[in-house]
Amino acid sequence: MRGRCSTTAAVTPSSNVRRVTRTLTPARRRGVEKLDVPGVPAPIVRRSLADVALANRLFGGTHAVLAELEPLLGGRERPLTLLDVGTGAAIAIAARKAAARRGVGLVAIGADTAIPLVTSAAQRIDGAIAASAVALPFADHSIDIVVCSQLLHHFREHEIACVLRELDRVARVRVIVSDLQRSWIAAAGIWLASFPLRFHPISRHDGVLSVLRGFTAPELGAHIALATGAMPIVTRRPGWRVTASWTPHS
Image 1 (cartoon, one colour):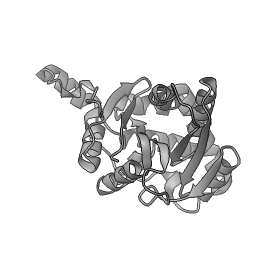
Image 2: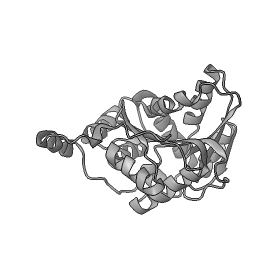
Image 3: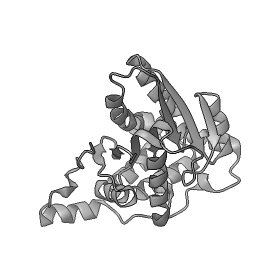
């Protein structure tokens, strides 16, 4: 049974709350993240991805996905398959460890368009493939759990629905989407934190822009409902993260 949206966005706030929310939530930016520009040297790609993995560990990105995954691990008699779309391998590795703690086998596969990421992920998880999120080379409902973490904000508005429909098409048990919650506070926070954490300048630029390209909980839920017809469970999580999960159409 599909769950009802758990975000409080459906509650009509007072005018003062709405005014403060609009002040703290900028309009969604477009922009171009430097790591997305073709031709970035592989060492810089690896360095920036290490910065992203560190930020995920420290600021809740990994935890946000695991919080959605944990309820799916109970009572499983057979191994699960998981596809990490837009992989950096860190999420898939953490998912595999979480499953192992519950005594559940989990085969983790990554997919990404960037060859350096695919090559690196293939050495760390069960397999990886070069593929676009808008055209995944998997049969309908062939993967138990499909995860898309901090990837959706990279796409233009008209492309988001295509990505969500592909995730829904490939998944058999559950789709988990996790992304950044757009906020001036979050953008300032990642910029300030990037200096003591010694992030590469590309990581600093892309981190701030990623936040400004992120979603509010109502926006993410609306995108999913319009693209797939599902009613996702949308949850705001620590570290200015927002997650959505739903049962795919059979």
